[in-house]
Image (cartoon, rainbow, N blue to C red):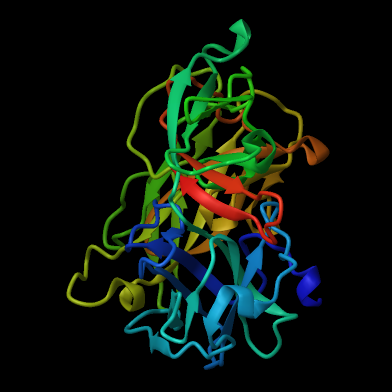
Length: 397
């Protein structure tokens, strides 16, 4: 795998790497975007469960608006040195499964970012052609602003199920020669890049770029995310049926899930697919090294159909993508679907979705969809005028 063949998305390539967090201001719910020339930083953290101390290195790659490497030289976007070793790491303490916890701030003390745009952080061991993980982040100039109005869905049949946004870009003092061609707006629901929507504006008037075509920025509202709490191991938390503490392992079985497609919408506070690492039984040390790992078993009982389905646990842990270890496998003996995943102590949120292949992920039968559901939306304004050699990010919501 060469640099040009790297998958330019959030992905973990090494099965020993767990609990990847990419946090702005220590908050995993915030989109990883920093302002250009403002000394802001995003912190990457992850655990290595391989049992051996390894040397990891990092590199940052500038990308275009479509998340492919930009046709510019590294010297055009980086000042300083890359490919430096991750120097901050610490061993876990009194945990059944030993691990090494790594952290790295981006930008680091070794380099500065010179221009706005999309960036891919690559963590690798010996050769960047074989990364252990990748993470997307964005650097913005913040010279325009975005306003968003939530309106009913375009079609009457979707009024109860979909959410639609009508965004407006306020250009202020920015002089744009051809904004209808040079500007792109990308909107994300719950930081999920796989359902991101991109569009150019329809018209420009009074220093405002408008997106007036109904149905453009519209998503299924989904439902509130399912949640479970494994912050404590001496008693069961929310969503947990039982916990078994053994000498070498900890097992947690969640309360079985059922389809919610035929149930009425019920508001609940959730994390919209994110997770937080925590151990409420020991607050006298760093959560990052005292939290233990738990074998968490998910169970889904399909009350709606006897047809076999490709069901997955979907959340920020797997970037909302169907991955083998998050697949709910059908058990003909119990006639339900189960999946066991090794997770660090904390508070988690997730959905159950069906992989339809080329038709993508469907939550219709497992979760349903409600226009009243609470979701996070985030916008990115890309700008590339005649003569520019890269895609700039000039504003975010």
